[in-house]
Amino acid sequence: MRSRYTAFALGDTAYLLRTWHPSARPASLELDPTTRWTGLEVLRTTGGGFLHTEGTVEFRAHYIESGRAEVMHEHSRFVREDGAWRYLDSAGGR
Image (cartoon, rainbow, N blue to C red; front, side, top):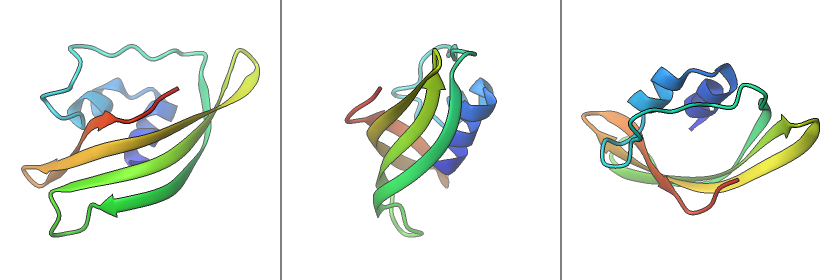
């Protein structure tokens, strides 16, 4: 989760696409270059340990858009595939 947040902050769409589960991955991704990510709070996690194949992360990502401070609150689901965690989907977004 933290690495995906960093990729959003840096505009690294290649990394974001690589870490997206193939069943949900978009064909392409275009990030808004005017959005400035300013902080991440991980609120809760489930699973995600060494022996787990699934996990969730509840987080708040802070950003500035059009000069206004905003917050994205989301519950993200991840699955482990070939030893790597892949983002599957969310139960809430911007």
